Image (spheres, rainbow, N blue to C red):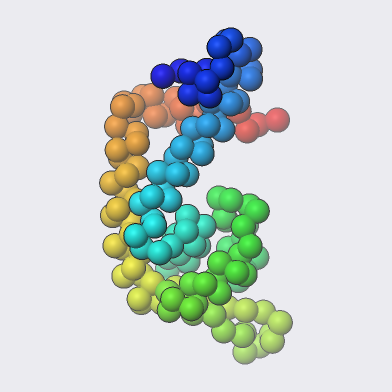
Length: 151
């Protein structure tokens, strides 16, 4: 189904608008797909992103600023996300010994185990979403999206 059918408009949109609406529509569709995968785990896409960032630190602590810089959704409230993960014992947050204004954040063993389980479900959905595209198409799509973000 083309984008005009998806948004239920009768006229063909100008190419620039058609492409942008298609990107936004598809981005929201992918977000909905990821939310449906993560819902049984009682975790949001942003919390999942924080856990993946912390896992990438390979056992080293990090701070809120570094997490925020690496977030996919830049409008996320990183402090609130980390606090929710602390409540679930998936992340450890403590005041730095040498600088009381600095907070050190690290994924816990429980968080790593949890992430391993969630990652499998996410990866399965990602493969399902992209199954209709071959390697060349996936590479071209990535290149086009990167090109779109360049000003």
